[in-house]
Length: 229
Image 1 (cartoon, rainbow, N blue to C red):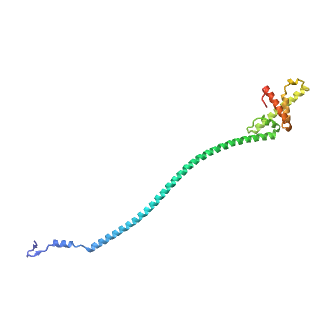
Image 2: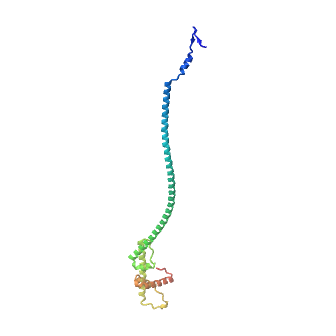
């Protein structure tokens, strides 16, 4: 029922008018908001497309990296196999090296022995050529590389032979003539044998005679228990 004023006139309902006024939309405002929303959406779409492009690029890069990883893993396996092979080869090379080292050391030892023999021969031929026959028989002292000591030994050896020869000659002179002892009971004179050996040592056409005297001397020394020169 409408409300009446004091004079009986109907009082308009302002609430309904305000409601109707408030219910009318603001088109300009809505257009503005709609444009703003579209602009934001366009910006979001632009950002999305940028992110999509970045994602696609990263995806392609990842595929390349995965391919490179597989290649590196294959190379790693190849290198590992090569290292194992090198390890085996190293073991073989070491065994060969040790073998060659042993041979080298053996040859060095033989070389040292040959050098000693050559030095010995040079010393004998140079200063003691008259003792060469005794050297060929293995009667001269050993040589250890000390030249002075070896020369001293050879000098003593030579002096000993000379003294024995001189004594043999003196004994023969004091005897006053040939020995008249029964030849069947006569023992060959050792000093005379040595004297003759010294005289013919190194003489080419006396080699057989020297050998005969050498045999006689060995027989005497063996019987008397004397050391061989």
